Image (cartoon, rainbow, N blue to C red; front, top):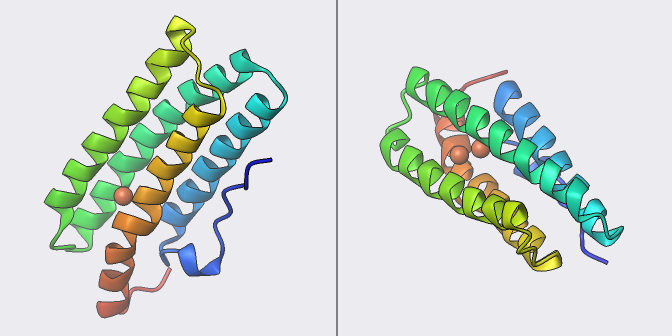
Length: 135
Ligand SMILES: [Fe+2]
Ligand SMILES: [Fe+2]
């Protein structure tokens, strides 16, 4: 049984739009985990497809917010987003060709998301605290 991706309090950024999007993305990852656990490769593939779309939208809105709030690392962060999306798309292409690794793919997807949420976005959390952002 794989652990679920839970966005707990310390993982919240402190920006409502970003946090809501993170919660939604985590729910999609959990859905693909459940699908694989239930042996449903097609549902997993469909969910990964949705995740690619939503992650792309999330990155755009996050970058817009970062720019608006004067985050000095927006450029490097955007590059990190490009890399994340590329990795997820290569996972997605495995679904399409039927080259499904099951659990392994899902774990790769989890680590991608954790990478953005913990690895990269936490720096923005620090920036929001620095400028005293509320909301
Ligand atoms: Fe993010
Ligand atoms: Fe990010």
